Amino acid sequence: MNNPINCIVNNITPAKQYIENLTTIIQLCHQHCANSNSAIQEAFTDLDIEFALEDLPKLLDLIRLSSDRIQDISVSLRNFSRSDSTSKIAVNLHDGLDSTLIILGHRLKAVGSHPAIKILKTYGDLPEVECYPGPLNQVFMNILANAIDAIEDAAPSTPQIQIQTLIVDNTAIIQISDNGNGIPASIQSQLFDPLFTTKPVGKGTGLGLSIARQIVEDQHGGKLRVVTELHQGTLFEICLPIRLP
Image (cartoon, rainbow, N blue to C red):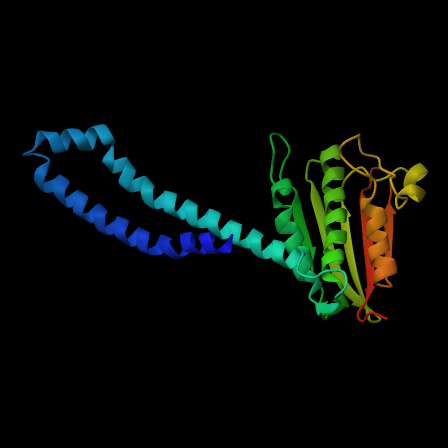
């Protein structure tokens, strides 16, 4: 995928230069020939050349913007799944969070009467954390996707997700909170049970949080906990040792 995208990106700049040169020539032809040649004048009018010359650079800018977006997604996908569960390495957790947000970017945009979901990031000065990046990124994906679901259901006037990272006693802490409706106390004890879900049939399997806890606690020796109150939103806290035991 990267090869054709790079081809597009690398050729936009010379294409813009060629178009600027052609625009200059077309404008000169129009100035010097239009009055004496009715066919040229008619073609300029019928084809709306002035609008085309004005709009073409904008189209190229849009192509560049879209190509850059695809490149960002490609890099994010590579970062998201770059390591399998058998290899532990030291990584920057912020890269994993940012990659996950880019992949989920389409769900953060405004849709109809629902405003865009604002992401508030407060990243601390975390050292690289020894972990299994692929599975850990899946934890970020599950929790952030659940936060988006909660906000979509609650439809607050100013939807937002806050992500904060900090280090306490050689433990990296990642807090992800939303301003959705929160979770009723009657089901909070079931949140991490396999196959338990509050979502309608076809929207969730009920495995996301159960797997997330296994990854954080069993695989990384960390702790995953939830703080939630009805109508007050939900906060998930991931605690990870800087070095795996």
